[in-house]
Amino acid sequence: MRTVSIRLNDSDYEALNDMLANMGQTKQTFYESYTKTALREWRIPFIIADPIDPFYSPSNINRLEHSFNQASEGKIITLTEDDLEAMGSE
Image (cartoon, rainbow, N blue to C red):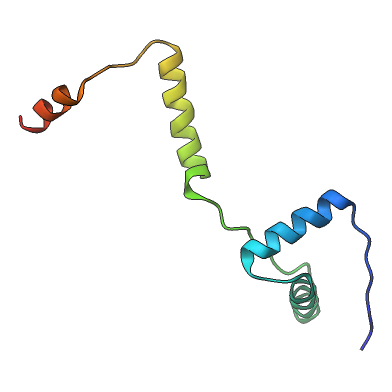
């Protein structure tokens, strides 16, 4: 068995730690699985993605930006709780 040592700048090292912690992996398992898959497939093998909070999904961000733009342009409707209840009973 051999030891491999790599150098990362501090911010990349911390970002990698955070990402792998979110995935439940260690750097050791990350590099081992990457290496085994690369050797089996003889290519850069895969992407392990950090789970994305659905709030930050592209479709939700687009919807939020659209709503923000409407509000900025004064295209808003203000209703009270009573107004909403009345609409629900119609």
